[in-house]
Image 1 (cartoon, one colour):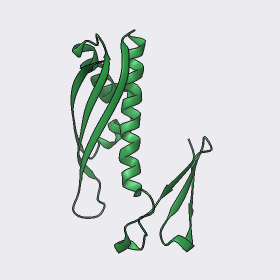
Image 2 (tube, rainbow, N blue to C red):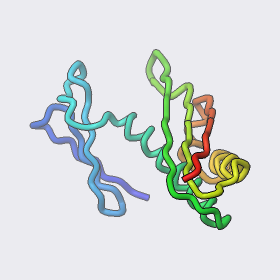
Image 3 (tube, one colour):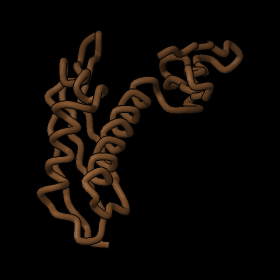
Image 4 (cartoon, one colour):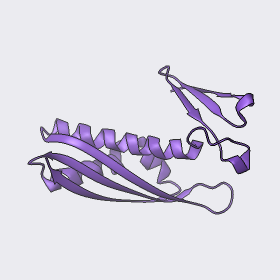
Length: 140
């Protein structure tokens, strides 16, 4: 996996990342750090990536189990260390999984498998952060 970062000097502190798959992602900093608040902060993109990684796992696990999953939302809340390096110290992920006749136990197991075996992002963040999850299943 590769990624190339390009600082855009005229924008203050904005960065453009070109991923190995050829996609562009813009990031920026807060005004108090020289940024112009034009895009998500780098740590926000890290948090979003973790959410996307685990949601991907949960949906795939449920589909492979032949469950009729129709939606998956994840709300992430993170706390960071007060001093540099300001790593994530706590991370909570709340899943809202929607489906038809979706067993609660299957959803719980999919989340557990993601966080114990498959989700590289949350497992990696778990090296510095206390990771917790909660979920709800919506019939629909």
